[in-house]
Length: 172
Image 1 (cartoon, one colour):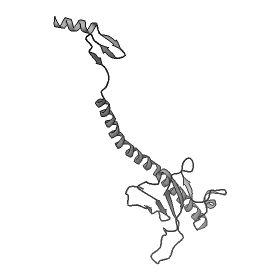
Image 2 (cartoon, rainbow, N blue to C red):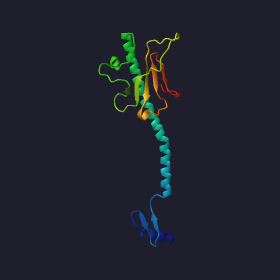
Image 3 (cartoon, rainbow, N blue to C red):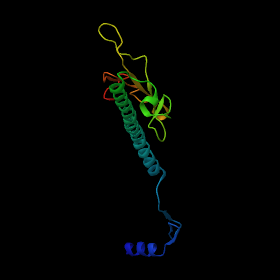
Image 4 (cartoon, rainbow, N blue to C red):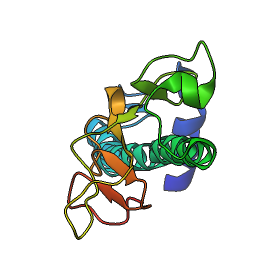
C-alpha cells in the first residue's frame, strides 16, 4: 500500500523547468551542487597548470630550429664565399646578393621573428700560436616571445663549434 501512495504522489507531481513540485510542498531540484562545480573547476585548474608550461616549452623548442637553420645557412654561405675568395665576408650583399638586408637579420625571415642572426666579434677562434686566422663567428640572439628561452643565444664559428650562452644541455 505504501508503494502505491508513493507512485500516486510521484504521478501527481508537476514539473516546471527541471524542478519537480510534489504535493505537500516538497520540491526536488535537478542539477549540480556548488561543491560539484568547484571540484570540476579545481580539476581544470590543475590540468591547465600542468599543460600550459609544457606547451610553452614545446613551442620554444620548435622555434629553436629556426635559429639553428639560419646559423647553418649563413655558415654554408660563408664557406661558399671563402672557397671562391679565400676570405670570409661580413656583408650580407656578398652572401645574399645585392639588395640584401643589413645585419642583424631576423630568423625566420618571414612572419614574426624569434631570433636575430648577426656576426659576433667577441667569440673569435685563436690558434696555438695566438694568431687569429681568417674566421667567422655568428650568433642567434633570442627576441620577442623567445627571449626567456632556457638555451639563450646560439653560437656557431668557422671551425664548426656550436654552443649556447647558458649551461643548458641538448640545445643543439
